[in-house]
Image (cartoon, rainbow, N blue to C red; front, top):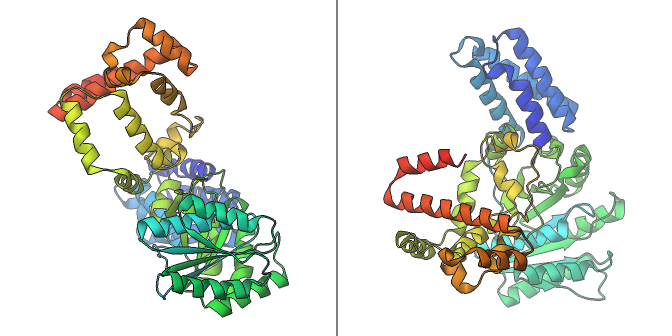
Length: 442
């Protein structure tokens, strides 16, 4: 997420982080590099220029050059300005109305239908809402079928009228159906086009007038950069939408859309999509995103994701097993599954301060656990519960069954034993011993 932008900003601010003498001249030179980094990320020239101008004015106004840590203060000023550029405060979704009507808009291929499903799952699981998805894309082949598949994945009813080519009537009828069936949120998935055209704008404007939604959201493919911002402006002129959703932030995103869109349309980014899975949706926090762009990570979001998967009863059971030295491979698999539910590995690593910089040339695959899982599933139930019984002949059988080598099985066994010892030490408060062991591991 924004890896190239992060790298260039880090390089630009390197001098001001304490490597060299800080002067008014090299502050100006540094900010010139910052502006160049923003332009390379496909940020509008005027926005990039105003950004660096504001940072420079604040820096000189706060006498940055004479402070104890001028480099750190400059980084903070850039971070604060990035936060403001992306909206400043987090803006939630308006869930007023009975039912709440959310109108989804955007170009074809922006991920609108998939994100409608993600939002439905988010509101169902996080806000305890009864959600109805509505298929109003009557033009694209199999669009309704796609929404029905998505609805089935997230466990939400989909309203569609096969044969009806009038999206306005479908929307109005869907709201009546929602009221009759006790649904309190209606998400309308409208038709997109390959480009903005008059008939598309007229249609979505008519739907908007007919249903009077509490929320009108514009979905942007973040990989399209400045083009996405121009499209957002055209939609906003017609719809006056309430907020923006950025999809595909897990790809090679340059960052232009996220950094420019608030300044152009004066509407907040409300949600982001960070992967293919239906759980890959996050509320947008401008300050946390600014931290990530500057390589500071996002520990708060990481902790929140971990807490979502935390099961107190399971944790107590695990604690007892560790205390009795009964921690087995089934427990290990359970921990892996909890990590996988937290999101994509690349996204999780990006939340760790400094990790992006250390692992910039490392390809982090979401299937990283597949080899480990294959080895564990090739073990018998008794071997998984009592790893100490796994001898040389058993290792050969496990390697053959999992399509791996004996060396890989040995490596997993070694890592598992080290982790078990660490967990045992943590239970007993042996922090000093654990630190020594970690040093020994590398």
